[in-house]
Length: 261
Image (cartoon, rainbow, N blue to C red; front, side, top):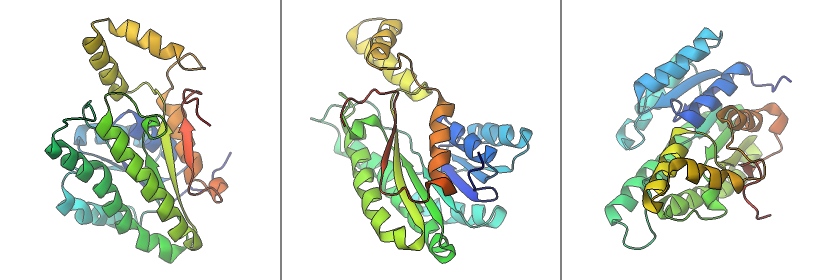
């Protein structure tokens, strides 16, 4: 199926990691010119090389979301090399496990800047050209914790929920300009982040990681962790022309994990 986005410029944050790399690859497979952005330049370059090897066009950009002063320069670099951004994928890292009580205020502030404020600032950078063209996609990856808060991930739950409210509000504002804004949330997708969280829980509970993963898998109706490419393909659909009437939505990619309607 041709998703109708060949030649579109896609900017993917966290493009060197598990979900971000899969998203970058899925968009590139549809013919997008892809800016793979990550704080880890080696990881971004590895993803960009995979795209190039497959015949696509991609650039790797080192972009630290904590460095607000650099956002405009990084955006300008991408525009100069690939063109104005048509598809923005906001995909940030997450904070360490924390309880809701007694969390360090400095930790809250740091991750608000990295996970929320950076997303808003970067989106504001790409919106003017989208509005001028009358076409654009803003896709923000969050977490299943925005539906069912995950124990011991208080900062992540709270900050990612704020992105849902922001995205829903934005969707109404930009819809007349042909721009969509949607949230995608992963369940338990097999990434390094999930591995780290499983290891942390195993350490806290004094059990093996295999026991944690077995118990976790049993809560998923599909009886397995998701594959990163499955997540990337959903994002590519939301970026597509086929999804032009989908906006203000929250799309779950969770194998049925979240029981709530």
